[in-house]
Length: 69
Image 1 (cartoon, rainbow, N blue to C red):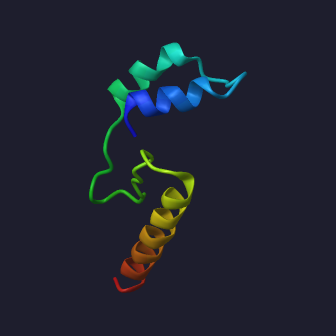
Image 2 (cartoon, one colour):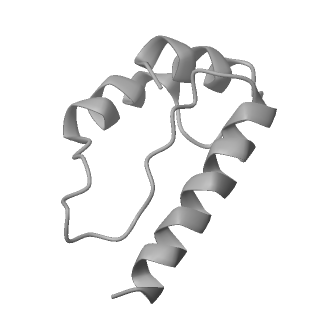
Image 3 (spheres, rainbow, N blue to C red):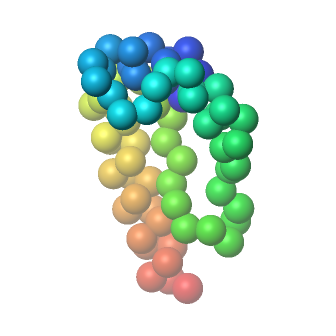
């Protein structure tokens, strides 16, 4: 997600443990996954149902790929 989307969601959570002032530094240090690293990157600039559907689909694909190695 973009800093704007994440910031908006963060601001809507009262009492969130991470202050909004740290968001820019978190994005500045964010590193994409390398091909040899396990993980799934999900686009969160969509509604929650789409996020979950995308995660389930990608998770199933990754599991199948790992089983076929």
